[in-house]
Image 1 (cartoon, one colour):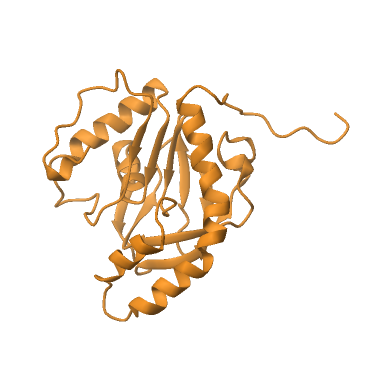
Image 2 (tube, helix red, strand yellow):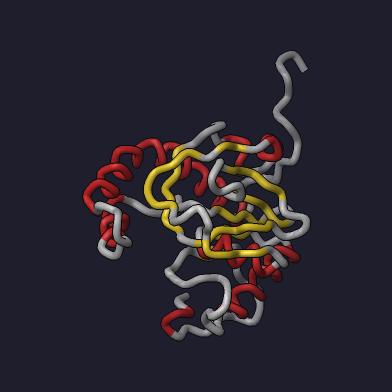
Length: 213
């Protein structure tokens, strides 16, 4: 669905196995498009009803604001290009993040940041400049500030509108250099999410067993 192009949003998620909300150039704080209210309502319903949900970049920011968190223009400036994030302790028992390395490569492209997580959010990944890189609401709703869905051609398209001070060719080359590592981690992550949505993966909220147990 493309609500930004006028597609109507469903009133509920009956008949859907998952909800995925991707990024965009808009901001989650005012002034913002009116249809964001509908997206936030769906995010709340999905979280409340245990519908597997994956929210990326702006989608993650809307996940935060939908549940009472705060999003603002980043005081640290934009984060664009490849970066490392650190997995937090709570990831150890998370259904999706438990298989993510301790410091995975990610691709960043955002100007705003989540400055305050919603009450009840479980922090799963962080970085020094931007402490809220990934979190979970409820048991089955994940929010990622970074991008796991893009490839080099998509980065090339985004680079056409880079702000002053960024060299498009350098950014594209830097992203392309880590793309294999990004795909190695995040394609299986996406596959696990899809399997969960299709009922092929059980929720796992316990740590991996110690050797000998």
